[in-house]
Image (cartoon, rainbow, N blue to C red; front, side, top):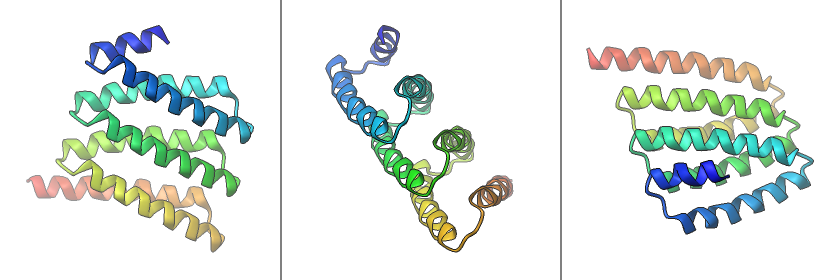
Length: 158
């Protein structure tokens, strides 16, 4: 925890704001506990989030906007849990999304527009689930779409 505080301090975050964030994390932990998730695994996740935050900071993103995104992710996680998806597989997906975000940033796409797209994708995923499509096949499709987006972006830049 101290290393996280020092990292936040180096990025000029308000120390007390961090504890407001910590209060929110405690709420999330309690919710995850209710869903039978391992709380210590969650702290490993928090370490990963700090890495993501520092990466986003380097790309000049507003870190508090990112935590609004995390709130949305918690809602998505609970929704996926209700659909019997594996929680940790979802975070592997989030790791991939971070790579996509950085790639889109390099191609000058608006990252927040991309997250509006993700919101739409979640709706599509739930819809596909209702139609008995394979959830992971859908993400293979998304991978293909990302390749197409990057290809089209390169054509635009040329």
